[in-house]
Image 1 (cartoon, helix red, strand yellow):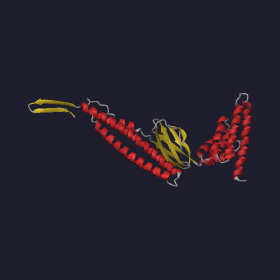
Image 2 (cartoon, helix red, strand yellow; image 1 turned 180 degrees about the vertical axis):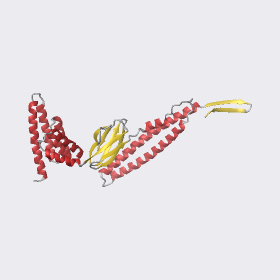
Image 3 (cartoon, one colour; image 1 turned 60 degrees about the vertical axis):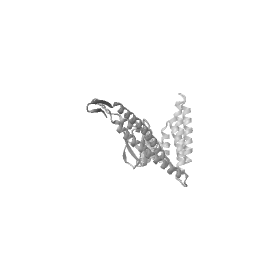
Image 4 (cartoon, helix red, strand yellow; image 1 turned 120 degrees about the horizontal axis):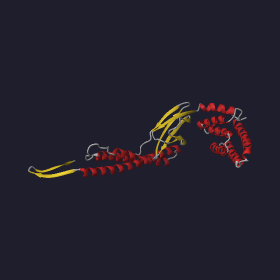
Length: 318
């Protein structure tokens, strides 16, 4: 008997087990109303999941199995959810689902010995990520899937292999890091969320509190220096963006060109364009603040002109 045949027989047996469990559980629920309808709806989603699984559409099957569990939570469905996650190579999710199946079923539950063996295998295919960030309360994503909100209660359980960790914080601030996780390893990751460019410029140009009588400020000098740096950075970033845009256009028109290369170049070009826009806005803000400080400095000058026997005398603050 082939593995595929055994899998199909296992799915058929699981369908019968679920149907029996739903039927038994629905009996007392009829008195309360709605339980019978819920069990029938769950059975329909489960059967669709079985059909999709047997056809090799594991992602579609996972959606249906999870829907069946949501409508009518039964531990037997967790077995099918875990098996489907296993087929999708999502070892971390499969491990959590299988451990939950063991916790919610008795020692004589169907598939228990199989699940126990599977759990031992899965424990050798996961690692952990210990994440810290300075962004406050931020949404955490692992491989673009929600994984919690900072501060986290503990390390994140992830599948072995290359992973992408990202945090999205208030004010459209974000930080991303790609890393590799090996079996049994706990990787420490610290993500520093950047401060918005305009806020950084404003903070740099805010004059400190003065305890001595105020004197005409020369902050305009610093302001124009910062403005010059930002303008130069904007020009450089804009030039780089145009170069990468040209490369993206060439890549799209070349043949053959892989989709992954095009997506990578498009992501790089978009990131450069956004950075260029931010630097441009920061440059405008810096020039505005510098102009204001320069005008204020000129108004604070005190010029005195007098005539004496020695001639014309000029005094003032510059």
